[in-house]
Length: 124
Image 1 (cartoon, rainbow, N blue to C red):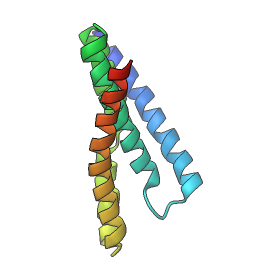
Image 2: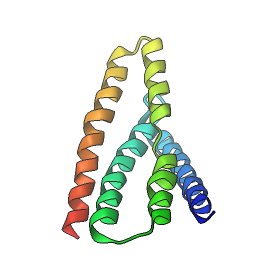
Image 3: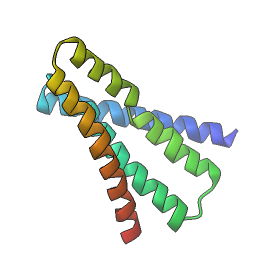
Image 4: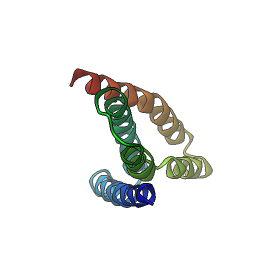
């Protein structure tokens, strides 16, 4: 039962963090490009690499804590399905260049941010 409570708590916090950061980015950068989703996904990749490395290499944490952080918080925080929907909408609107930029940056930079998160964790 504890793992479910942790999973749901992590998910609730991750969802609220995703929504708040996305909204802040839309207010700052506008809504012509999905900057909010892109920012959330890149930060999620960074945090994913960092957390996975810290949990596996630095701290002996319970399965429940790992589940709460990785599946709960980060699973709710990152927005891959939203990224696909927004990329699809850009394509549907004939905005091929913006769609291509969004797809490329999300994949290439996401991997780079994940690796950077691993390196940050290894420095500690």
